[in-house]
Length: 339
Image 1 (cartoon, rainbow, N blue to C red):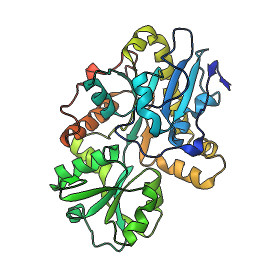
Image 2 (cartoon, helix red, strand yellow):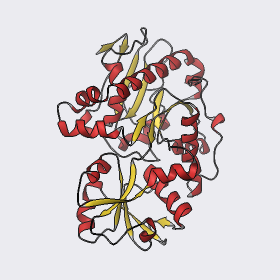
Image 3 (spheres, rainbow, N blue to C red):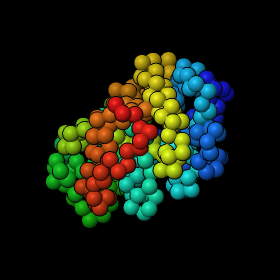
């Protein structure tokens, strides 16, 4: 498909979307080889999630003019993420702020072009409606389901429980026991007493909110904002220093177009949700609801976005995942938007 001179391709179908974002997420394997040379397409890899399809929808449907710039977009699953990041398969990749810092510690430097997904109230802890857990303090000596030990929601949960409630949360030997559990099984396990609570994010959060058998006991991301002073930014778009040097002008055009595409999705929520959902009313309802708890920040790296990136670094450092808090200036790309 050709969009205003941009060549785009989907290598993974929407139905294969992964809905959890891990702190280990970098990018994923795909065709395209090393970062493209000047004059060839700018290759972009983002998580294969319906929200990312919303973010690129306007570009793919001729609503954004790239002025002849060629862009090849690949939607990738989390399972193959780390390999392509390390092998530099794409010129622009989606990753987490924590992954950026961890990779730099191991010698792989990247440069942040823009923010990605912002968590405003997407992460909560739910319990069964009949549970005796009434407040976060009641989670002491209980078992809480998580999707991944180092996932963004887990980092937020551990930080909030520690700083706001004095509770240590780990998989073993802590006040709160964390247990990796598939999101689609948490309600059944809670009803049987095998779990006491579950961290819900994105679609599981949406389903729980519409289920009378569950109720929230902790709005994790809201409390994270209260502690850090910013809405956490879960993902960012990054490039590599040599690509930044050789293709800065093209990168700026891509970031600008990404911001325009994101703005279109934000201003035409129902239209874009209906299209991405492909006629599935339930999926469209979820995607329109998603905006009430999160935001797409692609194409922006303003002061609020910077604060959201720093917030995640603060939390990751607070729970021991980062040895120190990085300085954003050392990672901000010269091709990033200035305002």
